[in-house]
Amino acid sequence: MTLLDPRVRKQARVLVKHSIKLRRKENVLIASDFSAKPLVLELYRQLVKAGAGEIRLHLDSYEFSEIYFKTASDEQIRLFPQVAMDEMKKMDCYIRIASSTNTRGLTGVDTGKITKRSKVIRPITDFRIEKTKWVVSRFPTEAQAQEADMSLSEYSDFVFNAINKVNWEEKFKEQEKLRKVIDLTKEVHIVGLETDLRLSIKGRKAENASGKYNMPDGEVFTSVVENSANGFITYSYPAIYLGREYRDIRLEFNNGKVVKAKAGKGEQDLNKILDMDSGARFIGELGFGNNFQIKRFTKDILFDEKIGGTIHIALGKGYKETGSKNESVLHWDMIKDLRGGGEIRFDDKLVQKGGKWIIQ
Image (cartoon, rainbow, N blue to C red; front, side, top):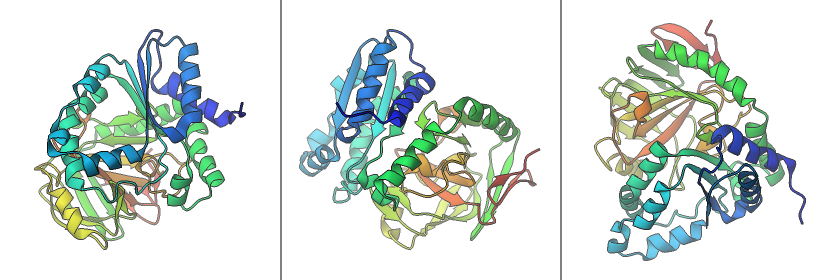
């Protein structure tokens, strides 16, 4: 038997004990890429040991999705997967481990088909989010390491450090102070390189994200009053959507809506995505990255939106728990790095400068 990396054992323990906080006899669905087998096996062992009820395993690979979207008829795309819904309704917990072996695997697939399918299966996604204890995590692969411009060993260190070197109970306490400040804030003003954007968050509720749904985690996020965004923002890093990169994105807002969207790469498709439905050009989420173990961009939003000293703004669907009223199939996070001299003001009071919080 291959010796298990102790960092994998610790990650599994974090997911079971901290993220989903498993209770005895709870049913758990693990959905994972084949390449995450070491972590899935350890998760399975720990779940059984902790007294889980039924444990369901869905092992997958991007090749299946590629075949499906290139081969399926329109009738098949529109078919609602009732069996999958019935299964999800019996689950108490859901753990998703993404470990892609090809981050560009769906680049050649018609995005229209993917969007159409997303609308069909949305009730399952909504049920999972609203009714189960769920968490999404990662297991390092060569493909992800290449995307991040790292060797596999370097990338593995990066992944495990972002998860295992954070004291999640302490992170919760630290972010709780920030959450309370945000809850009292009416207007957020973001200034940075080619960026000057004002947003109202009056009456909205901030969430302290400290490992319950994402692992790694480390952010505080809220929603934005739908018609309030005014100004412009230029994002620091490429935005990734369905495996495709959109570079040098600049968005101009007027009364909450993106009225002009430009990109150095992919501008035409960018605007097609933002026209997918009536909510896609409005903001669903405003998040503040607060995991200072994550210091660099890796083209993986699970990590990138948590980079300490950044903010991210998601176009499209907002989270109901934050008070968002925006509905969309889209939820697309884009990241602005403020560590190079940007500023954040809450109700005209400077609270962050150069990516560092200065809240008293």
